[in-house]
Length: 141
Image 1 (cartoon, rainbow, N blue to C red):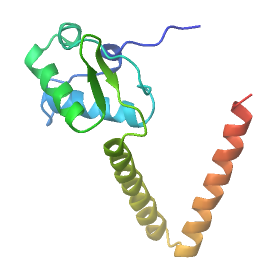
Image 2 (image 1 turned 180 degrees about the horizontal axis):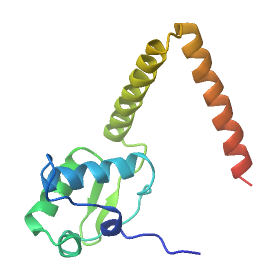
Image 3 (image 1 turned 90 degrees about the vertical axis):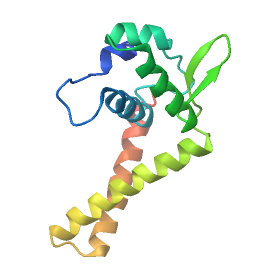
Image 4 (image 1 turned 30 degrees about the vertical axis):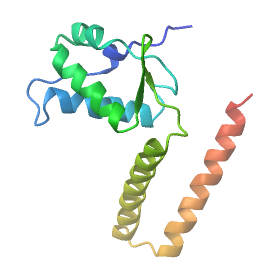
C-alpha cells in the first residue's frame, strides 16, 4: 500500500500567480480539508517543517496556520502541534455549508442555462444523491 502523501507534496506554490503564496497555501489547505484529503484529527507538519519543505518563510506558514486556526479549520494542541479540526466544529460546518451552497448555485445556473426547469434540476439532484448512496454502499464492504 502506498504511504499517504505529505502535506507539502500536495501543495503547489506558483510564483507567477495572482494569489500571494500565503493565499495559495491557505486555499489549498482549506480545499483539502473540505474534500477530505486532510482527514479530521490528522496532524499537520510543524510551522517550521512546512516552511522548510515548501522553501518559504516561517512567517508565511505561521500566518496560514494562525488564520486556519481562527477560521476553525485546524486546532493547535500545546506541545503536540497542529491538527485538522473535527468535522463537528461549528465554524467548519458553516464553511462547508457555504461551499455546498456555492456548488448548488453553480449547478442551478448550469441547469437553467441548459433550459431545465426547476423541477428537472431538483430531480437531477435527487437522482445524483441516490447514485451516491448506492456507490457508498458498494464501497463500504
